Length: 180
Image (cartoon, rainbow, N blue to C red; front, side):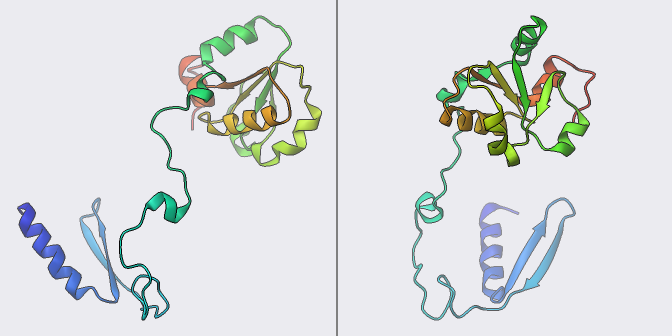
């Protein structure tokens, strides 16, 4: 079908879909028709609609959209897998924190790490020494950066987050490590 024919088809379907939702599964090449009840109080299609034009998505949802570029602030606090391996190989005393959840810890972990799940991280902070050199990791790097920022808020300064998390570690440093 050409583009204009598709648009005409969609417009034609739109007229017949009042009170229904048409779902398309592109993997199975199938359609599913779901009946929906009209809500008279709906802001968009109710008896007295208040949303009558497009709004700014970010302002409407109060959500900061993620940037495609890594935050420059984060880059200064990241360490690559090979760099962390060099640090650990020196044998000097460092604190290595795994902020993933226990079920993830069971799959794989870096030797010398302590499990400190992000979901309970606040309770671990008083047990840590602000003078220690602390390295954090999670699955891909986002949760460890969140934990790092929490530690910064408590005055910790010698902090690094493993860039790419344990998944990057398994890829770059320990290829035999199980991945999920």
